[in-house]
Length: 115
Length: 112
Image (cartoon, rainbow over all chains, first blue to last red; front, side, top):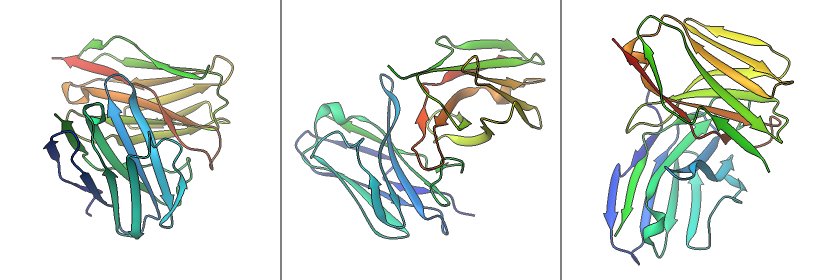
């Protein structure tokens, strides 16, 4: 079975540019999560969706970040304009029902470097 | 303030021994606690979940305990192997509807 698929795996861009990260969740999962991982702050939840609807975006750092889930099989996380402090590994995860008693299935992440 | 603390230093264990990783929490009342494994360049992979009313959970060579009095979970790998070398993350949630909060992880190295 295909797991969570993220693209691109690596992204290097100059500050001020728009960055779009993509995620395809596991088929049949109805909850999707975006995380950011850094050495300093560990794994932080940015936003999560349930049945394509954003439920909690309190972890989104600022208005430069936005996320969409137009359908059950696709989500994007956009940063515009990007800044060097946005450099991190961004993970997408999906689960069935989104309850915290359900395991989350992670993609292999997008390593983002903003120069 | 709320904190989740895992072994701050990396853990180095001789192959065949039992590795024990610690997850301590402060100012949380978790209903669930999960453990994940993360390899370099990969996303975390779910291993085990334990509920607040469960003292212990086992899966093959893995064992997790949950002590709500000590506010601590222990993660054990028995008969450790070099392939068990990875970073292990604990994560907790205060209810099925609340979000999961991750600890910073413990890097485990098993030497042959």
